[in-house]
Amino acid sequence: MSKNILVFGGSGALGAEIVNFFTTKGWSTVAIDFRANTVANKSIVITNSGETEMVRVATELNATKFDSIICAAGGWTGGSITSEDYFKSVQKMLDMNLSSAIGTAYLSGKLLSPGGLVVFTGANSALVPTPGMIGYGVSKVATHQIVKSLAQADSGLPANSLSIGILPVILDTPSNRAGMPDSNFDNWTPVSDVASKLFEWSSDSTTRPANGSLVTIETKNKATTFTLV
Ligand code: NAD
Image (cartoon, rainbow, N blue to C red):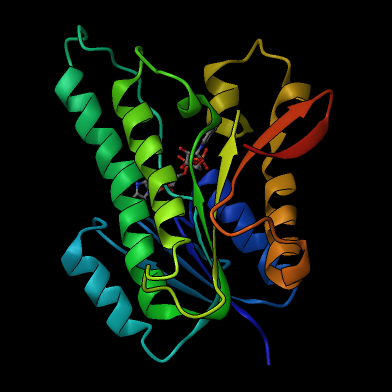
């Protein structure tokens, strides 16, 4: 019987690569995003990651249990306390980064298999103060808190499951290339490196970091490292 993965944010640069990678390896894939993913075995389009939509998704997927649930949803917007669009930028980051992590956590409580893996995407930049991007920093620190909270015995995740956070420094995505065309792409992490590591952790529980780990992902001269925070 094939294994199941649910990718929240499965139509983004990282999420779509995870869907591609696991589909190629024979896993059954479900993608959830604002846009459809045509590669996934099942694609669920949502309008937001609030309660009504998450309950609808959980009901629709009720008969399925997932070996891995990955949140690759999110986004980036800068904004300091003196920015003209300060409140707007903070709300946007809460809606994209935090709401998606909260929704994924809810779905994990309902749909993760015992012994399963749930992974949230935080950010390495949120390990230190982020005065120029308050909303982004706050939403990612809160995501890290979700990772650690779900790792507790009384979190509501099924027995022997694992909660991990991945903290990229910078991913090699089309949108980053368009925004920063003069950068050295050898120091950006290919999304396939992330997908490959998630596949390893998903397929072989002995390779997984400890429950509640935050793992920084950094690439230098085309070599990607995964380091426990
Ligand atoms: P992306 O913009 O290509 O994809 C993100 C996807 O998430 C989009 O398809 C979007 O529709 C979806 N999404 C946003 N809010 C959502 C919500 N509330 N519910 C459901 N789906 C939602 O981004 P990416 O570059 O693939 O980044 C993936 C993750 O990695 C994000 O969490 C991002 O913050 C994080 N990250 C990225 C970088 C980078 O350099 N790109 C660096 C550090 C962390």
